[in-house]
Amino acid sequence: MKTKIYDLTDKSIYDEAIKQAALAVKKGGVVVFPTETVYGIGADAFNVEAIHKIFQAKNRPLDNPLIVHFADKKDINLAASNISDNALKVSEKFMPGPITIVCHKQKNIPSCVTACLDTVAVRVPMRESARDLIRACQTPLVAPSANISGKPSPTAPEHVIEDMNGKVDVILIEGRCDVGLESTVVDFTSGEKARILRPGGVTPEQLKQIILLEDSYKPVKQLSVNETPKAPGMKYKHYKPNAKVVCLMGDEKKIVDYINNRTALENNLTAAAVFEHLKEKISCDYVFSLGNKDIPQEAGNLLFYNLRKADEVHAGIIFVMCTDYKGIGLAYHNRLEKASDEIITF
Ligand code: TXA
Ligand code: MG
Image (cartoon, rainbow, N blue to C red; front, side, top):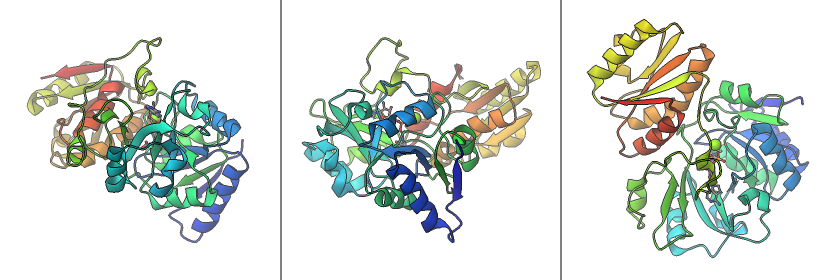
């Protein structure tokens, strides 16, 4: 398939690009677009044939349900029914933004969207162009992250083009994503308290200010392929680059020594993603920054980006430092843990 690629940072073609992408969606096609979290691959949420094209392009298992994206929070009841007061509170405060709420579904939502569950996930992205696109489509869009299933989610134009060029009708690029990790998925359908199914851009601390949350989010142990988890996506391998990923937690000095000692023994090209102030102490072939240690949003923004960079430079292994669990750190930790082949604590 010939994919049309438009760069939305070129304001002279912005309107035309949105129009062409919307046209492709209306014709039952599939388009890639930026959001504030990660790039998404979207199709008309009511067009079953188009939705199947997404599963094909991503090589995504059919039992992993999709998020329905709206331009405006007043429309989410087109997909969600009996929205609880707590879910409404959260949507009032954090939409548009990096949050997805799981509610009971409306009957007309196709079963391939929800993987036959009786719940549906809805989200209103913050990125202006995403909402312009949805508005122009005149229909909500289902949109998983625009990566081949199992790989790190794309947060930069070059990464989304690498995975999706030739597989979709249109790719809209617009620089780097702002958050760099996917939205927080919160379930409002089981029990009195809401439950975080996937930590993300909106933190537990922020949610707890307005609703009661099920104790704290606990990292999920890897489920076997035959088990049915609450968020079906959780059982599959996620976020893995080709390079082996080694996650390092704890004492900074010990981490630096460990990386350098192990690098000396490696035959492959090596890469490391460490906080900016440690970069010059690392002897790997490639050293990437995780930003300022005191601003965890920077590490969040750079995690997927750096995992993909490791593949770009053909590193055989990448050592990645961990943040603490506070704030966005929980989401960072969750993604890195899933991406990792080894986790070492000092
Ligand atoms: O930030 C994001 O949410 C991005 C951008 C593109 O919007 N999208 C995204 O979609 O991350 P995806 O498909 O990669 O992840 C959706 C997650 C999966 O873990 C899926 O299992 C879960 O949401 N999910 C979707 N519908 C659900 C439902 N009804 N109940 C529980 N979990 C659900
Ligand atoms: Mg994904």
